[in-house]
Image 1 (cartoon, each protein chain N blue to C red):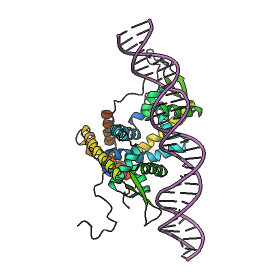
Image 2: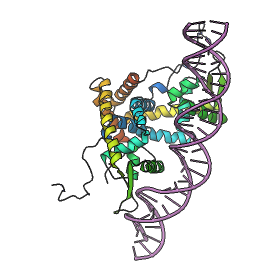
Image 3: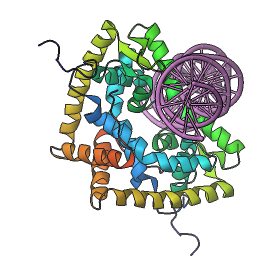
Image 4: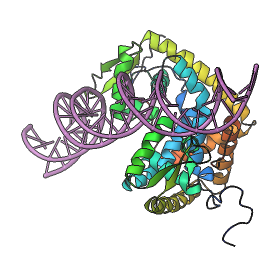
Length: 162
Length: 162
DNA sequence: GAAATTTACATGAAATTTCATGTTTTATGA
DNA sequence: TCATAAAACATGAAATTTCATGTAAATTTC
């Protein structure tokens, strides 16, 4: 009985599957799947995803400091610094030191940056509405609540302000 | 009325906040927040996150082909190829061509690789249980369902097999 | 059944990311 | 208030990732 008599596939492996039901996999895969389309649009606009995230954050809070931006855009600080430098070269944001606390660097949208940000945020809102529709009506609100709960319980949750 | 009379903070910006309620942000942030602890453990084990993902996939299906592995481990193919090469150098996986279809490269766990994979999968299961507890009882199952629904609707959903 | 496509990986160069660390400025504390 | 610690960024070198493309093998077409 060590060998199945009708082993079509070469008797591959164990039978218990871990990955496809694993919460962290589901979260990552859902995030990727849900983002794919819109992120493709972002790239069509000549932006990389982290750059779009920065724009979205600045849309909410122009003049945010780098560290906060990093938290909300989910980008590590030194990496963000370099991304911001590129965005500055490109003319969509500007950096200015904070006179109140001269350690801080605040990042501002330029007019072009703001236009881009607003256009993309509008698109993102439409796309999100589509997504939430796909999610069979009330599921949408529920999944958001659940995700927010998860985040709140796991991360201290700060504000983009200050 | 253009200027608030008691503007404590320098009258920062608009009032509507987009990011913090945006589904794609919630998904990405939830994924990050939920994964942070365990991924730290993974790094303590001397692995990077993508390497752990490969091990987990191989735990489910030893001898998976590179393309499938890439889909399930959420890693772009050419990047995965290089990661696998490193893992091979390190002695935790082996590559072997598939005689049935000689374009394919199949990846197998070495004994050390399997030990690592099994230990980490066990830890991951415990960690997931903790997470699901944090998520107030039944919320856990629901969030999983919702995520799976999202993925199924958005991604064709293939199997690690073949 | 030969040519044209497609699939599956591998690879090299350019670009980006990471990691550790440096600098400057603000908080803290004895 | 002076020293020390902490916070906020910036930066350089090494490592990784990306992108386009190359190669080999299977599949589809005509």
